Image 1 (tube, rainbow, N blue to C red):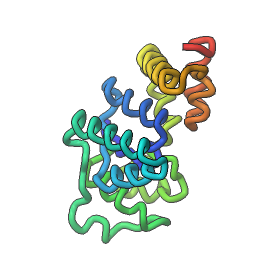
Image 2: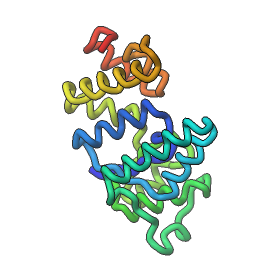
Image 3: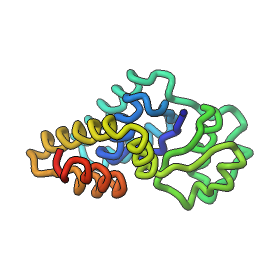
Amino acid sequence: MKLLLDTCVLYPTVMREMLIGAAKHGCFTPLWSARILEEWRRAALKLGPLGAAQAESDLALLKAAWPDASVPPAPGVEARLWLPDQNDVHVLASAISGHADAIVTLNNKDFPRNTLAEEGLERLGPDQLLYDLWLKDTAGIEALGARVLAEANRLSGGGWEIRPLLKKARLPRLAKALAGLSGGRS
C-alpha cells in the first residue's frame, strides 16, 4: 500500500515517528513531494536554529531511507484538479503521480472524499491508519509505540507515559489501544 504523507502529519514529531516507524516496519510505502518536505522544513524554522537543524537531519534520513518516495506531480495534472484550498492541489497531484492508494492527512475539509474517490484515492487520518495497523499487527505497533515513548523520554528527560504522549500527538484512538496493552506505561 502506497500512502502519500501530507505535511501536517510529518511535522509533529511523535506523529511522524509513529507513521515512519510503521513504514519501516513494512506496513506501507511512504510517498511525499519535494514541496511537502519543504513545507515541513519551513514550519520547523519557526522553532529556531535547533528545530531547523533537526528538520534538516530528519529530512536527510527520510530521503536516504526512501530515495524513491519523492514524487513530483506529473506535468499538467495540477491544472486539471480542484480542491477547496488551491494550496493543497500539489498534494493531490503528487498522490496521483505516485500511484498512491491514499493521502494521510489531518486536513479533512480540504481533501473531500468524493474528490479523492474520483482520482481513485482515499483520505486517511493518521490515528485511524495507525489504529488499523495496530489491529493487524498488535505486537509490532506496540513495540513501535514503546520505541517512540523511550525516545520522547530520552529527549525530554523522562516523565511521559504512552497514552498522554500519543493523545498530545493527536493520536487518541491509538493512545487508548496502546495504553490498554501496556497498562499505561511502556
